[in-house]
Image (cartoon, rainbow, N blue to C red; front, side):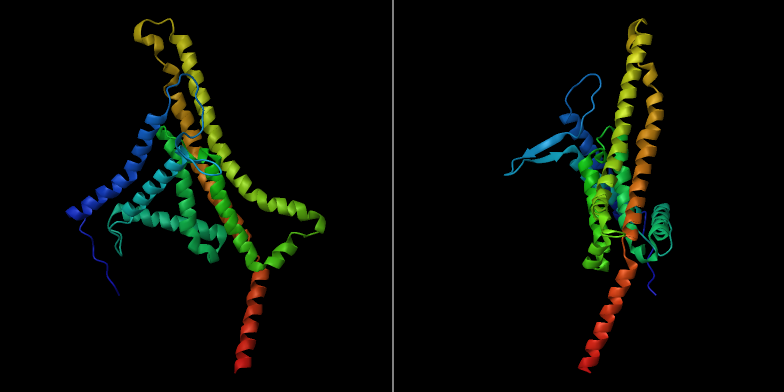
Length: 309
């Protein structure tokens, strides 16, 4: 039996590695904030817009745009990678620090969630589902820092949904391409067009649901905050000095709204997207057709070996 040595958490090398991983979590977000400040034009009043365009690269068909949603997505992924490396730095056979306990708790909960919703056959999918939830949640939560949420860009959420759609079709084809084609005409051939539309509606509904909920929350929060600012001016406009422009109604109320629209709604949409991913993939497997194909292949293999013998 291999015994893992307990790392020296007080050594300089261990601490320097920790600081490097913490910088890996923080610096990408700080870089996004700097880009936001440099590229955001000065404007007054309500300003609701999409992702900023940082760079436009000429191309034969259409220009390639480097947008704020792409940059922020990569920053979130790098930060999540740094967080994972930090939590797993100095792992031992028996947890001796809180970060390892946190990492083990996350892994345990993700495995339990996958096994309950997808079954034991898909237990190895826990890292993929955890990555979806983590990327979606942190992409929504960066709006608390004044950054554009990648989940508020339909191109990002639809790209995620398209990846899930390819995985769904992969498992549907496990039962055989012909069996899948015949299944489109069930229960009666008249339903074939509707069944085909239903196949392609899955990524569209998943992508637009996530995007719509996040974007609507951001728009509502911005409109309410602006309205409260105008109402504050009407109340304090007659006061002297610095009290004249004091936005008293914008203190506290927008923060309470942010708890729902930015935090609760963002985390809930990440959880819903992960649940839909698990259910759609697990339900896509045609177990009867797949088992029949495996039995048929086994008989052919046994027959071929018998003929050689």
